[in-house]
Length: 199
Image (cartoon, rainbow, N blue to C red; front, side):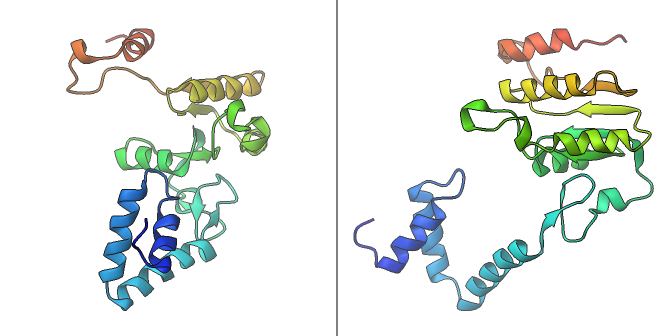
């Protein structure tokens, strides 16, 4: 980064802290911001500060929200007897965009990862147990990612819910629509066979 003035170097350093942003991309972004109008830069800075000031966790499901309860938990047309457990708000948004789910959610804000110091106490597991104990939930759908961490988190939630009067289901994994079997990896094929269903 030699050759850049100190303020530009500092901006590049800060931008490169973002996930997936390396030094070259950070440099391009910094250059873009440098040539943007002061009004555009101020709008960007204000939107960042607004998110930091206003966004918090929903008191029910721990989704990100501007008020005490998120839009989904506040929607009276939702099926409150079904809770879909997800790793993070991005997973919730992906399910919502499919338009196929009309229940409620519970956001764990992570998955088990002992190597990263993330144990059960770091996740919103007790809050999930409290929700189930204090309501008529009939089904919990585990929608964690099909990774080692996601699978171990799903297994832990299953163990915690054993003995409760609730049906536990797991989202299916397998061949994507329009996929070609000869290009499918071994793990995906294994899951596709494991989660097969009758027709």
